[in-house]
View 1 (cartoon, helix red, strand yellow):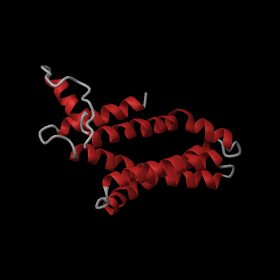
View 2 (cartoon, helix red, strand yellow):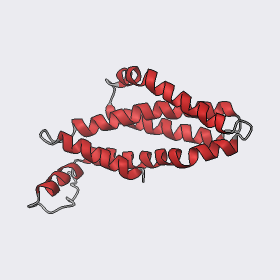
View 3 (cartoon, helix red, strand yellow):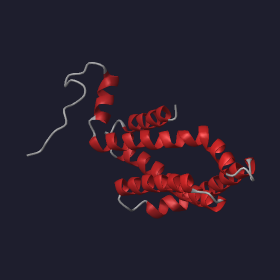
View 4 (cartoon, one colour):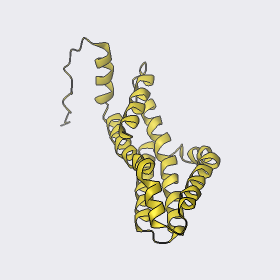
Length: 168
């Protein structure tokens, strides 16, 4: 038979805010996507706190120029490629694309950890950025699409809250 996950909150909830939260939590797909957002967001938080320090120490001959080059590459890819890139993958299975994006982010971070030559840091940036461009739009779309009909904005709010929490 089917196995059911026990609801986190009791069946009868008087508080409307808790009722909306319960509806989001008990949607298994949204819960899984939100867990992924929390984990991937924590990886991104490392980029804002330690990435520039790591790059400067890994490539002392370039110093801050190395960080600048990588941030410029990241920005240019996002500005010029994100919309066409997301449009390219919009008809694929969104859950699969979330997994592919997560995988690319992980591969990009692994390449960075193993890079001893700056070209590997550049390739890490490109792979990581491609993963980021797939993961976040697809994850946000799933939270919107799978949200309750009259509570889609609430689902997106929970998505943003989880992402913001992961950055702390």
